[in-house]
Image (cartoon, rainbow, N blue to C red; front, side):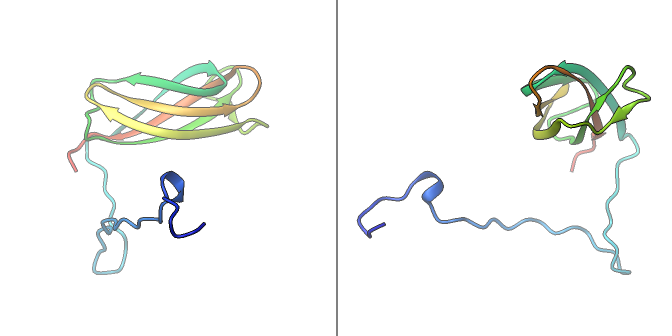
Length: 125
């Protein structure tokens, strides 16, 4: 590339953003605490490819911390989850007042049964 060419998009120089550090105790342990009203729940669906899921739950706010995992299950999402040949990915997580939207990717040619687990800390951080 010569000096007269304009860079844009993914050609731009990488920008480093500073992140906040975790709280460290006097013993050197990382202190991570969930609020007393933190909870977990799950949703199920059948699908493949990229899917945008809306998980409605009035306890979730736009400022909630939401942790998501997904897995394949056989006949009952509560007792027989497994790791099969399909790749499962959580791509994006966006809480809002009244729920959370999650974009996932199920790399398989036909719909599979999917369990979406949420760990929610609704506290204001």
